[in-house]
Image (cartoon, rainbow, N blue to C red):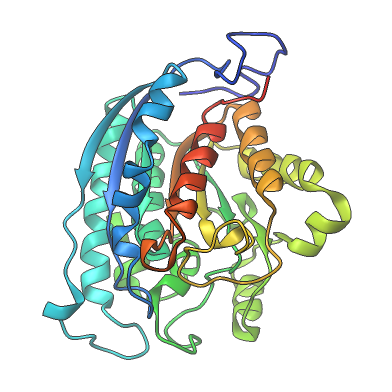
Amino acid sequence: MPKANEGRAAGSGIHGGVQSLPPRKIRLIGVPLDLGASRRGVDMGPSAVRVAGLEKRLEALGHEVTDGGNILVALAETKQAGELTAKYLNEITETCTRAAEMVEEVLEEGMTPVILGGDHSVAAGSVSGVAEFYRRRQQKVGLIWIDAHSDMNTPETSPSGNVHGMPLAALLGLGPEALTHIFGFSPKVKPENAVLVGVRDIDATEKANIKRAGVSEVYTMRDIDERGMRAVMEEALRAAGCGTAGYHVSLDMDWIDPEDAPGVGTPVRGGATYREAHLAMEIIADHGRMVSLEVVEVNPVIDEHNRTADLAVELISSAFGKKIL
């Protein structure tokens, strides 16, 4: 597993846009889940990111990449939504459990999982898998949640009943037991190691849930505006990395401003710029402690010439060490 500050030395490795960090064995895992959202189309996100050339871009950086294909996901057309306070909860939990098992298996094999969503409810599975892997080694894992939304609703507080607005709450121990207790334990991440970055659209009930869960490291877009991306990311990574084996990075593409990422499930104006997004990923690479990564909410149906998927590939490349010089 990567250690703190690996690859920090300037001038190490190969330049010219090629990574200077130690090569990794990366396994791609597609989770084409769109049951957690109202707007359809994010189930095609994994394919769009693959078509944008993710595997070749990572291999060009010196990494060894294999594609594990897609996790089996139920189709909305073949299922009933169930309880309107948490639609398709059973099917989402089944998919997340399969994803969790796959992620844990990939880590057991000494590889770095890169999960391609799908809506953000997939994170309840991916983070569970990472947390279980480290729990068995008596270690904790941190979580960097980069998103326009806090995803801290529960069935009791959600205005829509869409589960993609609930995964972070579930990972912190709030919400339905089926989702919170994948692998039989909760919470998956300690609140002091869970960090939100770039949020700008939070329901009033979510604010209460954030406090209830004990999460104190919340960086809004105003924090980024006032203090700059570097200061925010350095603090966020310190919190997520304190006393942990490393951290999972959960990147929702709606964190980026719709001007640069138009093809997302729930766009919100005023997001991170193209360069701010790259800087955040580059700083993550500099620290060298990311143990897994997921990118979610790419919706090709409303995208423009696959722009958002192309940007997702660029950002993943930056997170795995691509540099300007």
